[in-house]
Length: 171
Image (cartoon, rainbow, N blue to C red; front, side, top):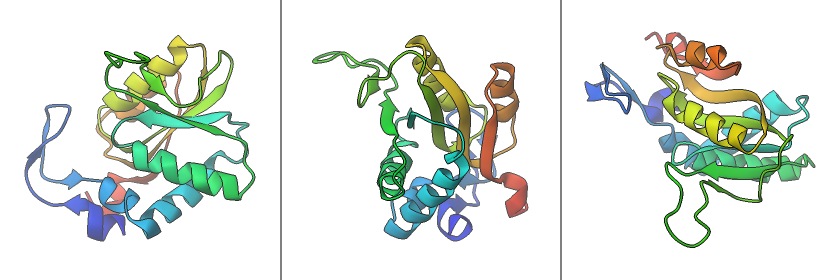
């Protein structure tokens, strides 16, 4: 599903500013009912023994993943809450950076995203949840492009688990 729906083999500029000969758009899978279901089951399997309190990530790549994980976690009687980190704090209303039930200091969280390249999106989410005192158990990406993001997060003390790597697709 990821290979047939999410990968585009063409020249693109990534959010990191790098150019690439391929693009991975995980939302093409995570926003399909069957893709969301499979992704959520995989992630719930990956976190079931981690004593996790919450799962979330930076908008927009994480949004459909987080929603799907919530449904499957509920079906499995996993007691977790969900959160979404905005790219910048809301300028009105609650003025929150992190949306969802309030995270509390000491909670164990997992940060998710569809793809990791340099790690920028996941790093931003990690910094936001650490700011409120949460412990980041790990980060999960559907695809690791193997371009330094996993190593950047490791330097921050965050373990990354990828469902797939670019090399799994012959890239």
